[in-house]
Image 1 (cartoon, rainbow, N blue to C red):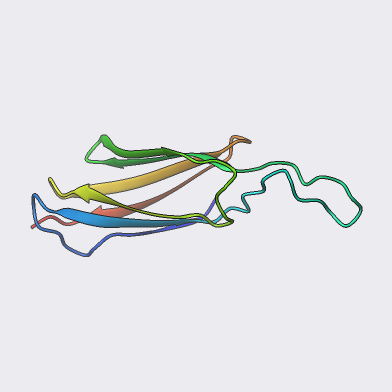
Image 2: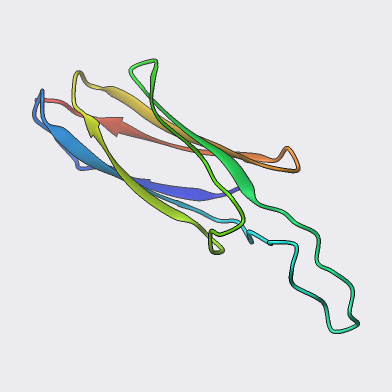
Length: 105
């Protein structure tokens, strides 16, 4: 699964910075029907996790109330330069991830 991750180009040590992630996914609720009346099976991203400096700094469990291509924004405290990785998985076991380098000054 594809996704886009955005963080500021540089951040100051000890200050929070915004992480924005867009995950490409249909997020089918299981309530929609095809033209022939058959139900479109449920398929949602159910887990999101963010790791920074080897530690999990954000986690979420999503439900069927999210729209297609979910967008999340959250803040992380800048501690050191390194890689920030956001990973997600859906209820069918498919996974996606996006990474960005965080430059702390």
